[in-house]
Length: 73
Picture (cartoon, rainbow, N blue to C red):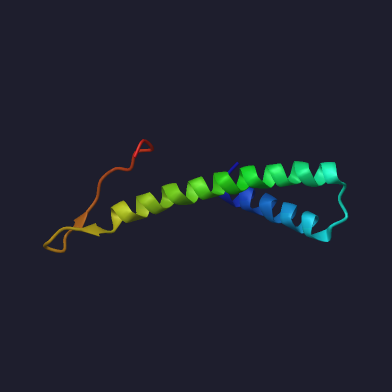
């Protein structure tokens, strides 16, 4: 599932839970799914931030410095 789909699903979960008419078991199930989606989105955003930082680096002469992003970093 891509980032946008995860975010849409997370918004759906929040809306359902805010209504307050779910059974406890269903609320817990949705909460767990929401936490998982939130962590996945956060991870993807962190990876994107690392990529952007690497693309906007400059050396002492003002020349852009780039290098390939690897997931291990």
